[in-house]
Image (spheres, helix red, strand yellow):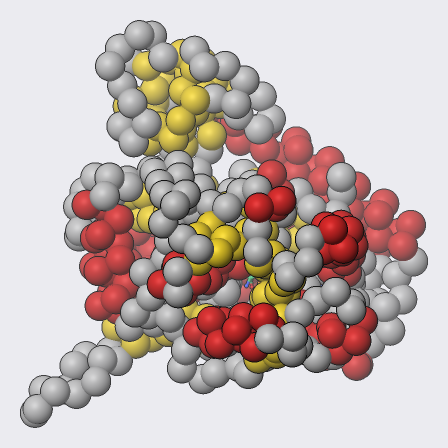
Length: 476
Ligand code: SAH
Ligand code: SF4
Ligand code: F3S
C-alpha cells in the first residue's frame, strides 16, 4: 500500500490495535473499557494515559470488544485516509451497540478535536467526544453519558502535559517504552492539521520525565523513546524556589539526563525538525554510547520552492548542510525521513529534486505519503490541490521504489559489520530466532543458538546477509 510506508514510530501493524495490560485482575473492576488507537506514537502514548485515568476510576481494560461497557477509539486526522479508517470502524461498533444496550462509544484524539460536536451529528452512535487535552475530564464525561446525555470536551490547553499521570503500559514488550516529553506544535507547516488538533506546543516537567524513565528502567525496560512533534524545541524551566532561579533545560540537557540514568538504558527520540536540531544535540548523542545513533529528520520535499510553500522554514541547501553535519559529528548515524508527493503546484522538476535529496541523504528508511488536503490548514486556504491523483501516485511510486533501493544499499553496506543489538523478542517468522535493533535502528534477526539470552539483553551480532527491510546475522 502506497499511502503509508511504516516502521516503528508510525507502525502500521499497530494501527487499530486494541490494548489491555496483561496483569489486570478480571475481578478487580466493575466496568470494562476497550481502547483502539490510530495515528502516531503520541496517540498510542495518550491511550496509556487514558487507561491510567480510567483505571483510577475503577474501570478495567479488556481486549475483548464483546465484554466492554465502554469503547474508545483514539483517532488520527493527519490524512483523509486515516479518518476514513476510523469511520469504517465506527460503523462496526454501531452494530455491536445495537445488540448491547447501555454500551457507550467514545471518540478521542485528533479527529475528536477537529470535528468537535459535529461528530455527534454525523455519527449518531457516538456518545462521548474528547480532545487530546481533555482526558482528565473523562470520568465525569462517562458519567454524564451514562445518564443518557451526549458528553463533549474538546478544550485545548496551554499547559496540560499529564506530567503527573503514570501511564498504564498497554501491550508492551517490556523492553522498550515511549515517553511523551511535550505536546502540541507551533510550527504551522502549511499541509499539517496537527497544530489545530493538538494545540500550542508545551514541554513537560523535566523531573517528571526523568522519574518516569528511571521507573521504567527499574521495572526492567531497556529502551525509552522520547516523543514530541518537534523534540528539538523542548524547553523547560522549573518553578523558582526561594532565591534559586533554576536553569532552563534544553533538549540536549534532557537527553543527557535521561542517558545518565544507566548506560544500560537506550535512549531514542522522535521527531526532529531539521530547522531546530542543534550541534549541541549531535554532540550529546556522540558523547553517550546509549543515546542511539539514529535521527528521524523529515525533509517532506527536496524543492526549496515547495518547502517554502509548505512553510518548513528551511531550504534544500540548509537541509543538505544538516545531513553533512550529522555525518561529520556522527559517522554511521542512521537517518530516516518523511516525504510528501504531489503537494500543491509540484512540478516534475520539484519531484526530481525530492528524488535527488533522497539519494544524497541516503535515507535508511522513509515514511512516504501523497499529499492529502486537510480542512482548515494554511495550504487548504491558500493553494489549490492541483496535482492530479494519478500524478501524485506515480510520483509516490517512484519515491517508494527509490527508497527501497536506498534501504537495500544501506543494509548491504552493513554486511560484515558487528552491532550491539538489544533483543526485543522472537522474530516474527520463527521462535528459533531473536529479533532486535542496532543503535542505528536497523532490525536484525539472528538464531538463538540455545544460549541463555532473553529479551532485554544486549548481544553482539555480526551481519552476514540482508533483505531490504532486515539484517540477518549471527551472535559472536
Ligand atoms: N511532527 C512531525 C510530523 C508529524 S506528521 C514532523 O514535523 O516531522 C507525520 C508526517 O505525516 C509528516 O512528516 C508528513 O510527511 C505527513 N503529513 C502530514 N500532513 C500531511 C498531509 N496533509 N498529506 C500527506 N502527508 C502528510
Ligand atoms: Fe505538523 Fe509541521 Fe508540526 Fe510536524 S512540525 S506536527 S509537520 S506542523
Ligand atoms: Fe494523527 Fe494526531 Fe498524531 S493527527 S499523526 S494522531 S498528532
